[in-house]
Length: 112
Image 1 (cartoon, helix red, strand yellow):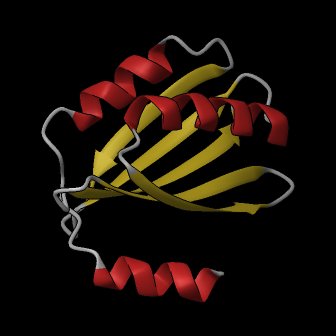
Image 2 (cartoon, rainbow, N blue to C red; image 1 turned 30 degrees about the vertical axis):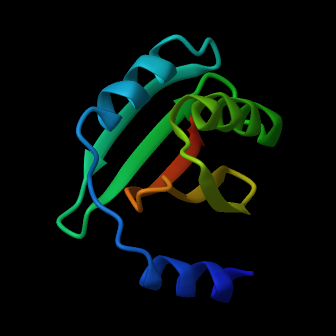
């Protein structure tokens, strides 16, 4: 699945979307499981979110990701999740019908 996702990322022309960072910020600011978060973008047009949870659990990370996804996703959305004992990372690609797309890397960690 990782290879399929990597190939998909290489084929899609994603970009930074005006207002998307604000939408992410609005969503995460009201999540009670979230202690703190940082949103950044890179020169290669990728959003990077680092979300610190009050209590890191896979269930909490999945819950916050699900809320965020409902808030920002477009018509076609693909993601993969990688878990370790101390964090969860999502790689998210979402695209509208008119080919407007964004790519986002989201890391959920503990506050410690």
